Image (cartoon, helix red, strand yellow):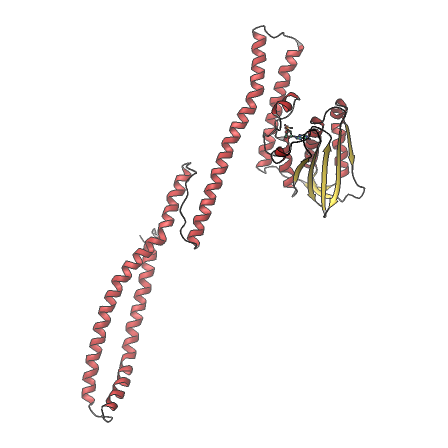
Length: 369
Ligand code: ADP
């Protein structure tokens, strides 16, 4: 029992302390009693007018009686103390072990999937702190589980939309309602394309969220990276008659970054800028050093973002206007989430600014130099 029960261990520990105390007390009394007795009797004897050497035999008798009395009292006291000690030790060890037992039960429940399980913490000591941490862990698990459910719901919803469109078009074709011409096929192809882009995005998202991609940090030249990004997106910008330019200071410091990933962030932001800017607008990539931190900004003159949405657009699947982004062939609301993860993996921060609808937007991210 001793090896498997903390309560029994504590009980035995308490009891041993008490027993050892009692033994020491008994031994100490045996040693100190004769001297103490003699000293006290001598002073009493003098007070009674007896000279030294008088009544030696009487003293011996006295002492033996005294010793018997002390031992008897000591035995009784020890017995009483032992009974009380056993009771108190039992109660104390139970009390100490009780919260641990509670946590054991709760952790089993959580393992079975009952994530709302919590323990009551009564004390501020280490066991109380353990209970606190236990509850925090349970709360976190509950949150992760809720997020997982939400994610599955979101993903199925996102997949359903293009699938429904494809199925609808196919049925239209089969029933002869839709003409079997290039336009219909293009429409179906566009939806299938959307689907495959969505799956790619999801895969990328799961990779960045799990941090399961190796970041290849190297000295990176930001101006070169911006130039590549602009080159890559110029066809898209031209198609919408949008001017895509950069505005970088000459003395940009070199920075340590994963070139591909940083390029992905720039491309995501600039592509968004182009997508959410009407024809004839402008998208600019700029950079500046502020408080020893490099700030890169992608500014557009587009539709802007209403203030109440600014805080949410980095959340996955979040779109300001679902119908608008869908009609304009828009994405899944994952791009900014990926961008945020990548910037944070570089030790930076990313945020959006906008004066409001129709007033353009500005996406800024920082990179430590
Ligand atoms: P999406 O693939 O839908 O563009 P993102 O994660 O890139 O997904 O963006 C999320 C949402 O943020 C978009 O649906 C859009 O509503 C808003 N948004 C992103 N960039 C801009 C921008 N430059 N101007 C206005 N709104 C934007």
